[in-house]
Each structure stands twice: as structure tokens, then as C-alpha cells.
Amino acid sequence: MAYEAPDYYAIEELLSSEERMVRDTARRFVEDEYLPLVTEAFREGRFPMQVVPRLAELGFFGSTLPEEYGCANLGHVAYGLINQELERGDSGLRSFASVQSGLVMYPIFTFGSEDQRREWLPQLASGRAIGCFGLTEPDFGSNPGGMRTTARREGDEYVLDGTKRWITNGDIADVAVIWAKASRSRTGCRRRARCAVRSPASRRRATGSRGARSAPRAPATTARSSMRGNGSCSRNRSPPTSSCSGSS
Ligand SMILES: Cc1cc2nc3c(=O)[nH]c(=O)nc-3n(C[C@H](O)[C@H](O)[C@H](O)COP(=O)(O)OP(=O)(O)OC[C@H]3O[C@@H](n4cnc5c(N)ncnc54)[C@H](O)[C@@H]3O)c2cc1C
Image (cartoon, rainbow, N blue to C red):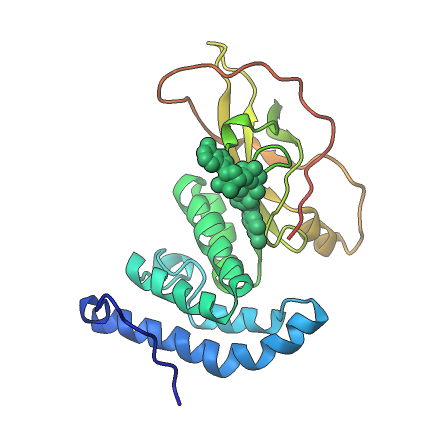
């Protein structure tokens, strides 16, 4: 029998027919295609990657973004319903889809250049590329104001220097949206930057080799820095020497 979710707050009647259709599609996918795979995948300690093309086909990656980038152009309620249903299947499944959508595709769409949108969004929407989002650090999770990772400008690039932890898809991603503190501006204020970085996994796939381990770099045009609203300056920190790393 098809799964019937309890509806204690009578939310069902607030949904449009399109939102219900999207929700039911996600529910059917979880019921018919994901749950039969998950027990074995759990026992073997792996993520069932075969669902990625199917998630893409159903329009679940970057579903609120415009069709011109290969996305479904759905509303935010529909996006929430998709994630509610994926979460019922498995929190790891929901994390995979919501990191790809909300933490990678959305920032690239909102803060990236048009070239970055054209390069990455169709690939991420179709599941040909996987993204990750690096904010949390070993010493700073809930308090990103304490972040130690820096983005230092070198010619046309930013060199990232720091350590990230708990990064969903960090070890398999083709592109990483990394949060870092940019070097000081002329006013002496530290600025925050988001950099989209072609990840080591992507470079390995491109070159067919493991390659040398070096500090990640992002084209200078990819960083979008913003001054803090209150104009306050953060304290000077000496940059750590390790390069970016991720864990899923
Ligand atoms: C499965 C998983 C996937 C993740 N994926 C990602 C990812 O893709 N990218 C990424 O950047 N991060 C990711 N994270 C990291 C996640 O965002 C952090 O775990 C989270 O920000 C909390 O940080 P923390 O673990 O360092 O805990 P802490 O910040 O040390 O918090 C510890 C506890 O103290 C509480 N606390 C902290 N500050 C306050 C305060 N000011 N007032 C009251 N209580 C407070 C917290 O609520 C918590 O209970 C992931 C984490 C997990 C578990």
C-alpha cells in the first residue's frame, strides 16, 4: 500500500496541485526505487550512487532555479516537499540532494559569474557533476565568524588555505563552494569570500592521475567579497598552513 503521511496540521489542503504532484513523485521514488536499495547500501557503508542520474531526471537538483540552466523552476514549497520525502528515505539521501541544490547550485546561481552558471549549473542539474559546500571547520561549526580559512589573492587567482570538516560529498565533489576570509581591504577590514573551486577529485578525473596535492585555487572573478554590515573588523589571525580537506 502507498505510504500515507500523517497530516496533523492539515497542511495538505494548503498545497497547490503542482506541489502535491511533486511531493507524490518524490514519495514514489523513495518508496519504489530508494528504499529497496538502502538496507544493503547501509550494511556495506556506501551511498547508492546509482540513484544520482534518477534524482537528476526527476528534476530534484537545483529545482528552484531557472530552466535555462537545466533546472525545473519550481517554487520553494515544492523544493521543501522534495526534501521532506527524500529525508524519509534517508538523511544521507536528503543531504546529498539539498547540498547539491541549496548549498552549491543556489550560491553559484546567486553569487557566481554568468560563465560559472553556464559551466556548472547544467552539469550539476544533470548529476554529471557533484558539488560540496565547505563552511564548517574543526574549531568552528555553529560560529563561522571564527573561521580561519583564508583566500589570498595571487594575480588572477585566490589561493585557499585552511581546513574544513564534515563536508558532505567532500571526497567525491567536482566543484566546491568554499567559505574563506579574504585578505584585508584598504580599510583594514577582513572580508568574507565564497569561492567556487574545481575540486581535486575533478582535476584527477580530468587528468586521469592523482596529481600533486597543492592548495586549492579559484579564479579571482569567482570570489564575491562583502564587508560586514556594521563595518566592524575581525582580529588578525595567522593563517594555518594546511590545505583544504573534506570529509563526507
Ligand atoms: C552529517 C553531517 C553533514 C554535514 N555537512 C556539512 C557540509 O556539507 N558543509 C558544512 O560546511 N558543514 C557540514 N556539516 C557541519 C555542520 O554544519 C556543523 O556540524 C554544525 O554547524 C555544528 O557545528 P559543530 O559540529 O562544530 O558544533 P558546535 O558549533 O561546536 O556546537 C556544539 C553544540 O553547542 C551548541 N551551540 C553552539 N553555539 C551555540 C550558541 N551560541 N548558543 C547556544 N548553543 C550553541 C550547538 O547547538 C551544539 O549543540 C555537517 C555535519 C554533519 C553532522
